[in-house]
Image (cartoon, rainbow, N blue to C red; front, side, top):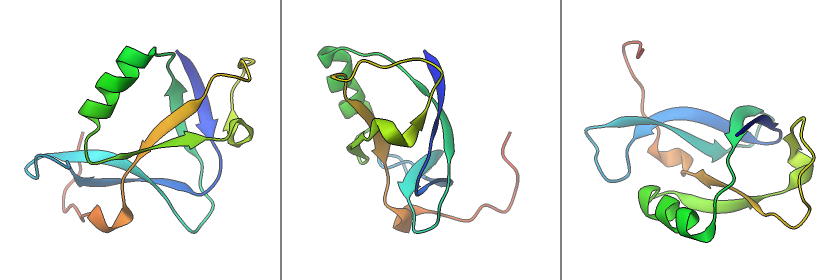
Length: 99
C-alpha cells in the first residue's frame, strides 16, 4: 500500500450508497474545477479486481493516467491504475457532522 495524490479534476463528496439509500458514503467524481484527492494505491490481481467491481456496483471503474499521480515509488509502466467514480448528480447535503 502506497499513499498518493491524484491530481486533476477530481472531488470527493458525501452521497447515498448506490445499493442502499439509507447509507451515506464518500464518493469521488470528476469535476470542472481543478482538485487533488489523497488516496492509497493497492496492488490487486484479476480476481481481487473482479470482487472490487462487484463491491463497487453503481460506480464506474476508470483507468487513470500515471502522469496525474504523485507517489514516492516508481511504478511499472505496464501496470494499469484504476479508481471508481460516481456521477455528481447523486450528491446530498448533510445537516450534521459525521465522525
